[in-house]
Image 1 (cartoon, one colour):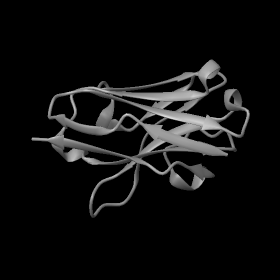
Image 2 (cartoon, helix red, strand yellow):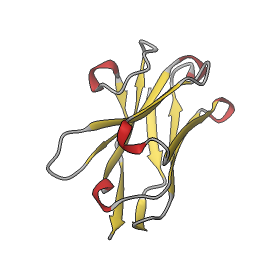
Image 3 (tube, rainbow, N blue to C red):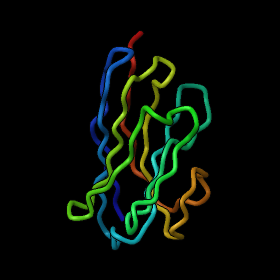
Image 4 (cartoon, rainbow, N blue to C red):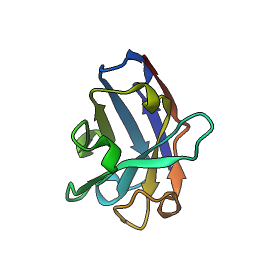
Length: 123
């Protein structure tokens, strides 16, 4: 199983970015994929997740209405569109795969993790 994040970078507060999570090594269209983030000095937290077989999604309260998760099963890729980014959302963003097909924002539900991509939101 391999998960590779891309799309991070530097953005001004209020700006937008789209992250990609390219997956391989498992039947992509029947798993849950989640996005997490870890800010400096803080614990990793769940942001959003999607079940690729039916498109069910879940979002953390802090990002509802600003972030959108989606999947392209033909491309084995999950996206996280992030709008109106805030300075405090500067973090390393990770995607992860849950073999249990659980739609969750809890780290322990996820079995495989990508290396992460840095997002810096400049105030």
